[in-house]
Length: 464
Image (cartoon, rainbow, N blue to C red; front, top):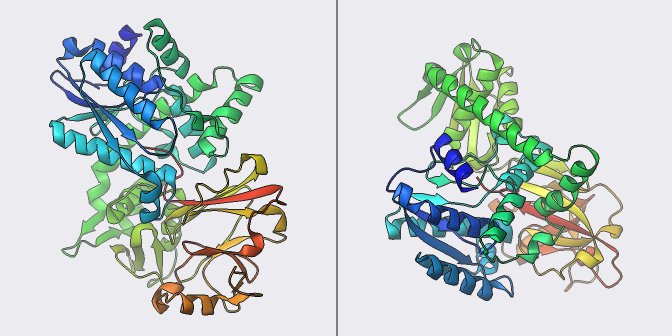
């Protein structure tokens, strides 16, 4: 495996002589394998290695995992830095799910360690199985080839030397070298989408359709990555021909020049300018590009609002991209159960899952953007929308129903913010005022048989 990794490193230009590398170590098989393999090639590449372990404070075994990582570091004479973070508390502050908060905190600490150690790269233990899970998640959510290329072996300062290997190969390497590793039992919890893909969907495909689906999906992602690299070069050659940036940082696209190019290049140009205007790429997808393309055929003066506060306006033969507007218009998204919907106005995905009572963890992860409701009490279509006249909600401290308007007044929510708060509704009855309160009428009880789990996340598609 070491020889194969050396070949993989050279083919993908992952390492250079003298690299100073921060290695993310959870204590699991993939990270322990990664650390040991990098340690085994340290002399060939003159590497300096620094281990980082993030103690999330969520699991009972977390203290033992941290102690084990320190032990591995001592055995290989690699310094280990343990960072303690309170994911649950931080998730509340950031008003997002614990899974996404944990991912963000890990990357923040990795970059903190890079500065502290004067390092130049971060090594992560993602492998082919991780790539395959990411591919399927993004495929089901309608991602284009840009998203389906998945994770890259080397991107900016992040390297993934194990991306060419399967989980089974990683675990076999650990056994052959007598490397003990920790087991995170939350990975066996099927209430999370990625876990369900790993535990249920992929084994089903392997059994009934393609036993080598992991390798197939990995190779497909590789091919798409090669095609994307070529298309990116072609896009960069012509990008400046139809894009102009004003002194006020407003981006203008000349529609006449844009339409001279093939439709595939048009889409890529529009994606690139939208990302530039937004300053972010996460959660920007094909649906947003099609909204912009539709705007081209509209009359002058029409405009659309997109994620990260980007406004696109058609002005004669120009598309004008600007940022920084107050969201005033309402929205209305019918929801499928189970299902996933991207809500561009709030830049979040909403995911709805039906889980059995036995899978419920008593709401330990219930927070501002995760909620559990009694599914069998829901009789009509659910929607995510902004407020409407006549909205009502059942609250524990109120007999009967309370007007939403009265709730906003009692909570001293400013008038200009009320029209922007997402609401989960069944008709004019509010089940959840996102970020605030949920209806007691739909609360999970001892009589509940099926639970509807609703999650709003900025990113439900995994890491970069």
